[in-house]
Image (cartoon, rainbow, N blue to C red; front, side, top):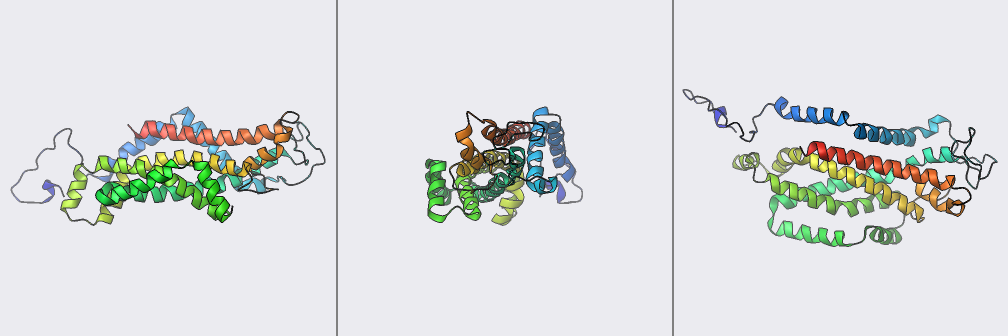
Length: 304
């Protein structure tokens, strides 16, 4: 609560120093102006716009490939046919159209990674907020648990979990969430520690606001850009991990058009019919690189 809000008669409003930290009584429009500027700056960046269009393309392909009249499971009768006007990406060893399978493969690629990233972001952000706010034994205990998870090789840890509990979609989503949550939590904890010494946190404590309100109404909005950046980076890694699991035969199973599975099934034709591997690999690369570029642009803009 600002001093000039007390409303004592006969007192004059004291001018705020030019570089004073904004109080919690700031109008909403003054706090939303930097956000609008950030959005406009992102839209002026060609790499961000192009990457966003690539991600949007794959989302549309994942959701709507059935409406496009594609037949990714049908045998065309032409086995290992090279790219042509009839089959833009050629056909595979079973005679299936590679173009149709690449578009349909966006669905399994975007089924595990985003869901696992959302789980990791929610879990990691919550634990990071708690650790950074409470400090003491709570912070120490959580950090040691995070250190154990971060010390484990990611892919090997996932392989152990999948081998023990199976390769169902819920298991893979939960595993991806557990793998990426500790890294997000450490970053969020560091951001919370930076915010703890600022005036709005001290004011909230003096007003005896509840811990939950301080965490989620005061701290969370101020560290949200950091959360957004970490979630985007984790999304790229999660997509790559899910494709790697499919390549190893631990996620999708035939006849799924999953990109990782397509690379695994057609690697025997790498020299004689390279298009059967090239186009699914290019699809993975385009999506992962696009998400990384979005994260880089977000970091450059939001950090300022």
